[in-house]
Amino acid sequence: MKNKIKKFFQNKILLLILGVFIGGTTCVYAVTYFPSNQVTYNNTSSKLNSTDVQGAIDELYNTCKSAASGSNNFKALTIAGYVYFSTNDGIYRIAQNGNGGVKKITSYAANALTSTGSYIYFSTNDGIYRIAQNGNGGVKKITSYAANALTSIDSYIYFSTNDGIYSMTFDGRAINRIY
Image (cartoon, rainbow, N blue to C red; front, side, top):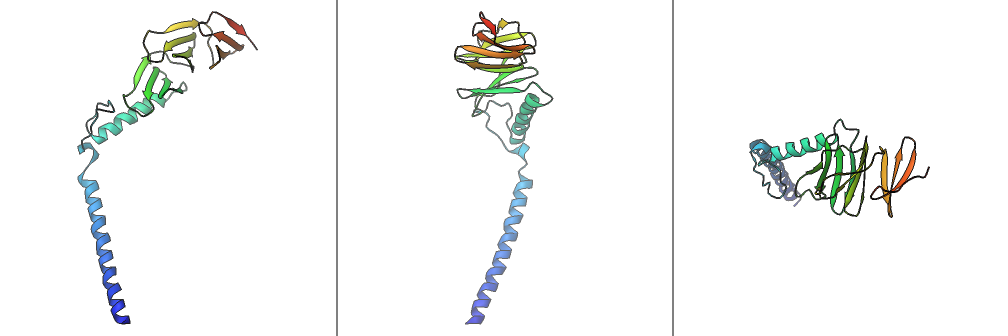
């Protein structure tokens, strides 16, 4: 009886080794046989230009790289399912789930971003501006103060400059130095 059990397990070990060998060979074959630049990719929901997997990976990599590389200006905020971010060449919007692709809403590079209602407020080296969250309607300059940081609380935008902290109404008509 003991011999039969040993013989049974020895046969199973041989089958296990053979199975691992065949499985490993198949995986290596699949990896080398299906290169990513030859696998088609459906780009209808992502709005990417690429039609193969490698092209889509490269396109996403280059978009993210250009958004963040070499940029001390990279700022971001999230509003109602969208991410707004600024790079050295503008302010962009993308849905948090990635659908719809990246939309450039303005060519201004922002030092800081905040939002209120349906507007994005941003500062540059020559002032504070606002633009609708969807990018429509154009950019409106609110004040000439060059802010280092912006935030919105209640009915005011608070910002800091090199010489103080200020509060401002959303339209920029009432600006007060508070510190």
